[in-house]
Length: 76
Image (cartoon, rainbow, N blue to C red; front, side, top):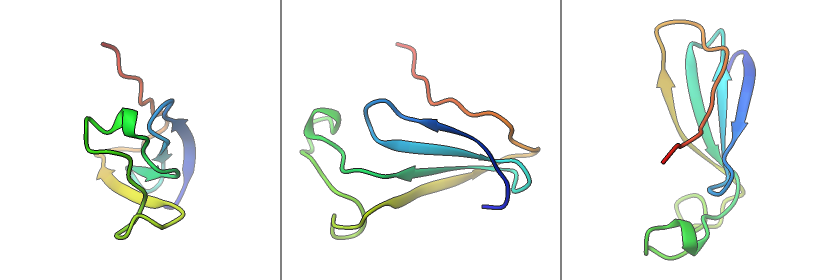
């Protein structure tokens, strides 16, 4: 991460999404275990390989230009 300029925190899944302006990417981090009610029947699960880490990076999405705003809003 080079230049974090905006974040969005998920309301139920404990995911922090970061806009990296100079890095031209969006990065997701999970910072708490996923509760059973949010796992689509898979049961509650923690973070990392063994489910015991304090946090985990969910991945990065490269963008063509500078990212300045993010939102994880899901409208049903």
